[in-house]
Amino acid sequence: MHRFEELKIWQKAMNITENCYKVTENFPSEEKYGLVSQLRRSAISVPSNIAEGAGRNTNGEFKQFLGIANGSSFELLTQLYLSKRLNLIKEESVRPIIDEVIEVTKMNYSLQKSLQKS
Image 1 (cartoon, rainbow, N blue to C red):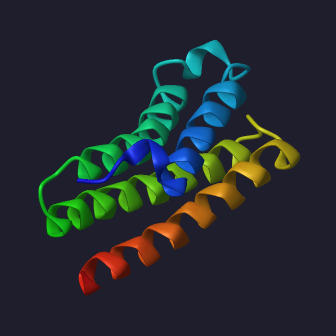
Image 2 (cartoon, rainbow, N blue to C red):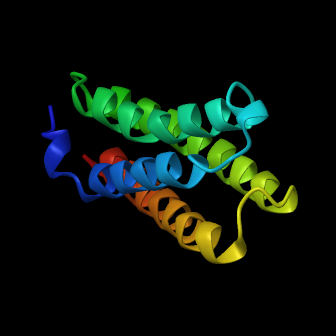
Image 3 (tube, rainbow, N blue to C red):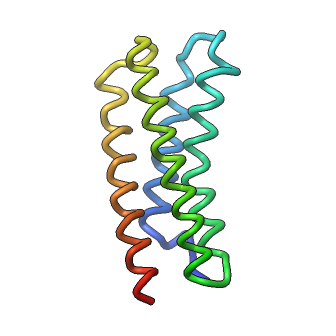
């Protein structure tokens, strides 16, 4: 079992989630139950799955939840790109979040590889 609060990947994923919540505050009200909801749910799924995996009994289980977190990261990227294409968010607001998500996915792959060796 790992202490998820100490994992840098979890900390970065929490920052992404916080930033996604902030950036979607100004989306149109008609997107509240559409893109805003989906974007926020996929954002919180990343640190949630990292935390759940860290609490599991084996590295194999942890790796499985990291895979789910990675899928949520790609879902989040898609929603961020769509938000930009629909002009709901400006490039200067979304680019730092996208870059953070890409960094977390790279960290995730590295962590999964290290779990295989254990």
